[in-house]
Amino acid sequence: MKIENWETAGSLAPLYQELQQLGLETNIAELEAFGYTIVPAEKIGPDGYHLELKEALEDVVKRRFGDLGVDQDRWENVNDNLRFLLWENPAFEKITCNPAGLGLAQYLLGTNCILSLVNGWVKGQGDSRTGIHGDYLDPTPDAHPGQNINANVHYFLTDYYKADGAISFLPGSHRWQRQVSPPESKYWADRAVSVEAPAGSAVVWGNHTWHGSYPRKNPGLRMALQCEYMRPRYQPQEPYRDTVTQEILDRNPVRFAGLMDVYGPFPFGKSDRNEDGRAAQAPPGTGHGRGNIDSYCSLFDREPAAGRTSLRPDYAYHGHDGRMAFQRHRDNFEKQQTKALKTKPL
Image (cartoon, rainbow, N blue to C red; front, side):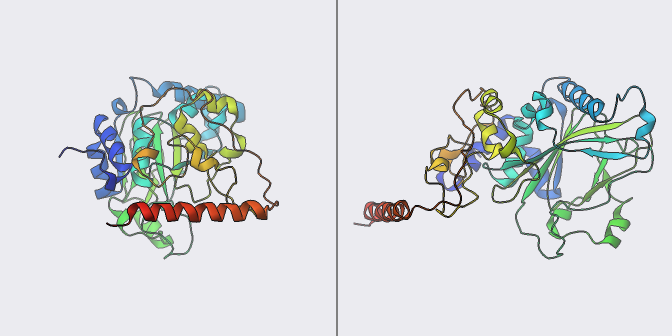
């Protein structure tokens, strides 16, 4: 059917149209049916796009541990997760707004999702592996909400096959909406379905889907870049809002400022919401809108923000202005009255 910008569908309508342009309808169906989907490299970027990311990750490893080309034996039986990479190289910033990866994450989480982490994975030959688990890490077994809270996009920087130590999934497990028990993790470790995809591909999944990885039996290293997104009400795993700079905001698209959550209304101080109305005045795609069409930011808007977005101010959370608080309540009441009069049936 023809997808239009229906008011009742909100921002999902323009998002879906752009996902159609990217040829990702089958990936959406796989997310719904099986809880994960593999995106081929040609739908993510130009041929060899991942080589820049691989080189950037290798540089991080060199700074933190030493040159990968000198001593790979140190990675034997190691499956390391390199944290807080985002500011290490502009290539990492760029990939967070990749239309295919971000678009599918927004499909799972909403078009106002924020960035939770950017990590690099390096796995050496040996028996090290990731146990079967779900990504909603509340240890209470029945605490899982019905909707996805976070979603992962893994960009494969090397080939991902079973003998390479690939990530693995339990198709359909997202419908169980609970965490894995230790006996289940052990039972499914060698029964999970291995991802089979060449370098440059990516896999996307929501937090309910059970997954793990196989040990790497082939010589060499398995490498990947992980971007995790989340709904804005929850706490991100890495401190982007506190560490992003105006220079970084200026060189990235407007949507990047939304991923940094620099326009978010939380946390509250004694004066309740921020008095400057910053969230309401934010450009589309940067605030905590209600998911309507007007708040949508195109996946294809790749122009640098160049001053259209700004850092979050230093708010005086301990201060309280009673006069302004009362005025805000009066203004809200008058707006509600005016809206009620406009919508009153004749």
